Image 1: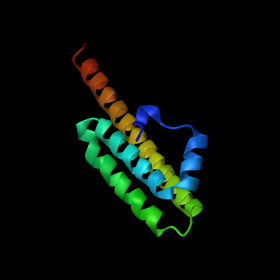
Image 2: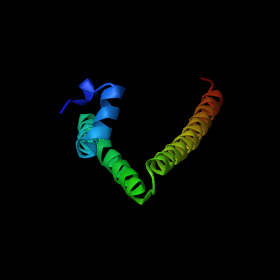
Image 3: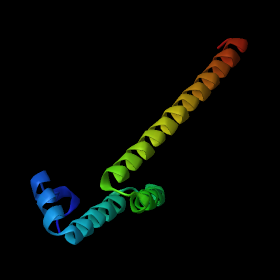
Image 4: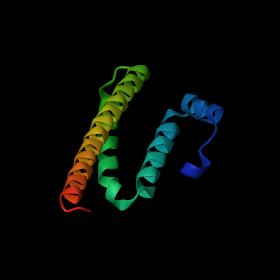
Length: 109
């Protein structure tokens, strides 16, 4: 099987899926496992959790299109959560910077 660095082209993947869905599924799982293994160790548990959630959603879906919609929705929700966390971090940092500036002004720099 090819590694993530040698992902087959789209037409090859389509043919593999059409002609041998089992081989396609095996390749998909292998590439995902390689991606997790290539990630920094501290991120692997979170990535494995995401994969479990995606696999659960895929198996609950009635069609491949429904599975894709579910995965897309999950990604959208994740991006939304990241955006909220980023804004909270920016706000906290701005508060710390303001407090530091006020303290410096109090002591006359």
